[in-house]
Length: 415
Image (cartoon, rainbow, N blue to C red):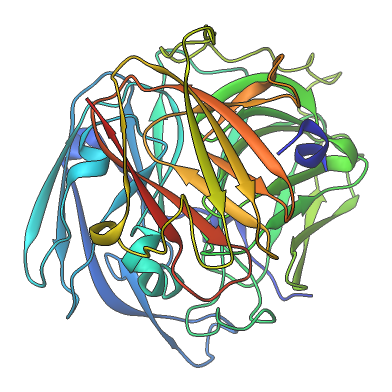
């Protein structure tokens, strides 16, 4: 995904509906994967069966603090096993916990090393149907200080349960098929995005507005304006954007959320009231870096070749961890991985537990951000670099965009 790529019809979601349930770590966090129901149309319309954490769509926004131990009890109230994956967390438990049997409870003991926006959901390998049915939510890890902003808005982007097998299934924002926001002139909104679809590329667009990307895949990045207010996210990706509302009171701004499968959700921002301040805020400052290696020495790097074929990844056709090939890495090694897409479809390749730099064409530099999910076009090669600093077993998955199958899987053993 290059910087160019990063910059690269409806009813009404109120601010009250956007206020998804939230829980702070001090309360003792518990989640239950359970069947539930959601109204995806009019308030008095029919209900749709869903799977949700605590039976709701989406799951509650969980909040905790960086470097503070976090214990989350996850109960499986489904009739089938389920697993929970924390996209973006750098923790050995991310890759090692088994699935949860029906009726059982599993303790997740985590100490978040990074501040940022994280996504919790079942793993795609074996849990894609549960994700499509609605199991997803946001985890927000706060730093000691907060950047300059006026209001924070979490935005979990997904598809309607039961219809996601069709490219024309529609889109949801925080569990609703519509979007309506309001703000005052010169207000700064901190938008926390997560693409909770299984296999869709999503694009958020607000023309003629000042939107600045400040974090990608749970890691701060060099702030830069989004061309034409456009942000593109692969399946599972997260992003943080500062939106400085630049419009007079009484203005209605169009918002478009589009899937590359051909579906669009049309929303709006109503600019109301007196200006929050006399002039816009200065451009957002960079977030403090999380404690991970910001630079890498490639002279003794370990090189990995991860080709994607029509039905293979890294030379095998495994779609679950049991049959996946194991790639063994020495802890602390600098790793250069070449992801070569030899198939006919775009693929989203997700690396658990290890943020990576996206390299320039000849490995002579890298983009000013980290990511854990990279889009690879047919016939192209993406090169990433990371430090294998966390011991344990981690999945690397290759998900065909707009595909209905589970992703192809390889394993990384770091020790």
